[in-house]
Length: 291
Image: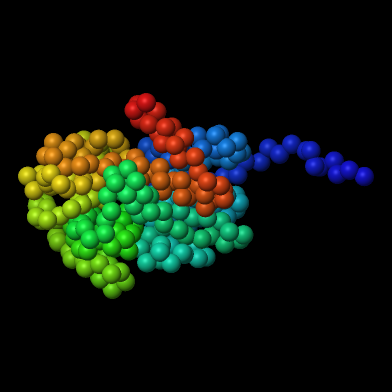
């Protein structure tokens, strides 16, 4: 006797997405939906506005809907830790999670931001951070993941510049205690002067994020010059920060590659399949009018 259910249609889509506030301008859905289509997967990526006070309810909703996972963006990358069953060691070290994977009944926290940044830095900019001196603007979730990955990759010295001393010093203490690098903190007040001998400068703040795309971190660009690699985590191509750095002779790296590569890592964590990262990149390039 044959099982009549074997050929029954399956209309159930697997769900993932992103929780954030604000989140309407987040383009992650574009690359993931393109990847699902390319591999013939009946998966959907949902862009969901979640206010900070509603994060616990949203995480309970993730469980109730049997979602396969979620991305976290501003302002939830740190707050989400308390709602997870497990946090991977590198994400625990960073103190921030941007990707949650459902494993059975457990929600497991991962961080792909720093890994995506490192892939973009080494693959697209052809820069090995080993032995380099780095300045990172900001001390939030993105800065934490990027500085930890840079430290573990052999960056000799990392300076964290942040307007909030408490948050900046906390990150520096973590780097000095838990990684091989030497780190220090500088209060970012007024126009920030980049120290001579800096090899890599990273804007890891949200300055320049949509809708404030004309905003630029307050940096003394006369201290930015040839031989320096200047990176921006903002995924908008050619931010004012990068444009000014390029005008002063620096090599620049935008946040688009980081966005794609961190998304590709998350894609594999959720689906178990290698991500079609070129498809993902091309979809975002079209969305930004670059192709």
